[in-house]
Image (cartoon, rainbow, N blue to C red):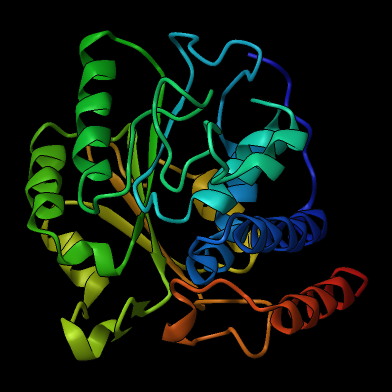
Amino acid sequence: MIEKAKPDAAALRRLANELRMRSLRMVYDGGVGHPGGDFSSAEILVTLYSRILRIDPTEPAGPERDRFIMSKGHCSCAFYTALARAGFFPEEELSEYAQAGSRLSGHPARGKVPGVETSTGPLGHGLPVAVGSALAARLDRSDRRVFVLTGDGELQEGSNWEALMAAANYELDNLTVIVDRNAIQLTGHTERIMRLEPLAGKFRSFGLAVRTVDGHDPGALLGALEAVPFEAGRPSCVIANTHKGQGVSFIRDKASWHHHVPADEELEAALGELREARCE
């Protein structure tokens, strides 16, 4: 494994804003995408790829690599940007997103894009795959770890809870579930559509060790993710409280931006706010 650069929390915040800028441009140019969730997951992704994951982009299939599964695969622009900036493929290729013949499709596909561990998009699939991967590592007597990022609306899928029962049953403390808890899904607020709270209590009742953090605070994310497993013999869960569309005033906490391609004026206004924040 290669030695990772170690940006501090302030640098990670800047990287997150740069990821938002690049991913929004991809949505605009590609004519498709999910900027609300791209923006809410930005700090989570840059923290994972800059400080946490034991990976080597020059050997994307290395057997002892950590596995990261982006279960909320509709937020592919943020994911692709994180992969490119980690060195899995040239950043210039991001401009090909959603273009004819591009391997950077609207949902990430294993076997096409280096660093993509499993094809995702249909929600509720990533966590079961992550549980299987963590169990395989246990059977291999490997120290590799498995991290999976889910959306909170995605947790309405029953397959997730079946997977969590198995993870606890097999005492998979090499598994970390991260929830992007932005509280908004396609048609509105999660608590009005299908209540999740008390979410931490639900995960604990399924046998996981849980910590809740500010998902836009890289320092808090680092503190949690560097501490896994939280308890021996238990899978870990990090509930990252976030905001849909974080970073841009007219996108933040708006369900209408779950899936939305910005108009010219929206793009320029959003990029202006993100540039200003980057300079702070």
